[in-house]
Amino acid sequence: MERPSRLNCKVMPFPELGARIADVRSRIQLAVTRGGYGQTVMIVAVTKTHGPEAVMAAWEAGLADVGENRVQEAIAKMPQVTVPVRWHLIGHLQRNKVKSLGRFAMFHALDSARLADAVNSFGLDAEPVDVLVQVNAARETTKGGFSIEELPGESARLATMKGMKVHGVMTMARLDADERELRETFSAARGARDGLLSAGHPATELSMGMSGDYEIAVEEGATIVRLGTVLFGARE
Ligand SMILES: *Cc1c(COP(=O)(O)O)cnc(C)c1O
Image 1 (tube, protein in one colour):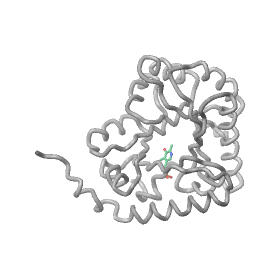
Image 2 (cartoon, helix red, strand yellow; image 1 turned 60 degrees about the vertical axis):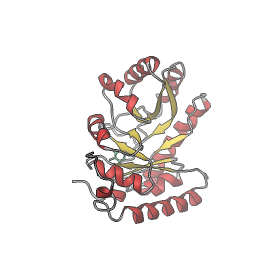
Image 3 (cartoon, helix red, strand yellow; image 1 turned 120 degrees about the vertical axis):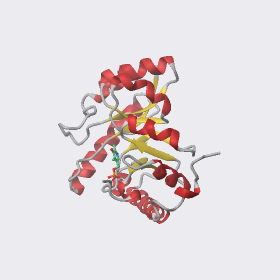
Image 4 (cartoon, helix red, strand yellow; image 1 turned 180 degrees about the vertical axis):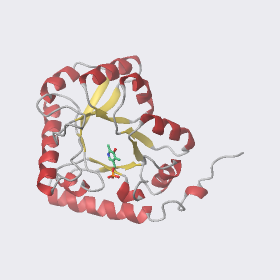
């Protein structure tokens, strides 16, 4: 019986992972206290560009949620992973690939009305898809997602779609934003999430914060942080 040995990947590739997670968790706890939202925060371990051993290492270290930004890369990795992690798709999805959403626990990047239509028809045929609406709260022309202004209209349309469940909002801040701008971006995303909630969506989640800005994101109410570098080190 040739099976990939779990022992092989236990501590070897990411020896500091346990300590890094412990540090991140305590920083998150402190940020929750400072921010005052009292929320529970889930860590999604972003394993993009790393092999399946990063996913196994995350699981061994107590993280059950992993994130990938490219669907092909994620699907190639899945068969090599022998632990029952939940896969999150955190990057853009082409409309002709919506069927692959059946493999993911959550899709964080619902970024256009046309993609919503495609996801909805897939979800009507299969199971309702669990999604987060990507909001371009930083107003970057290079980033996808709905603007804060167009979200209320789209929210009403999404509410009629039985093929998906809108669990909240995902956003990304500008990489070189200073603290004031980070807070503006993150609080705009929080407002967008609250708007979805008021419109009747089960929108309790706020996916924001990466390695460089997660503490501020948590202070601003993040319920999901997506962390790669701070857990696994710099990517190639
Ligand atoms: C890569 C990526 C992350 C993680 O970035 P780090 O800075 O390495 O923590 C988070 N979210 C998305 C959408 C990503 O593509």
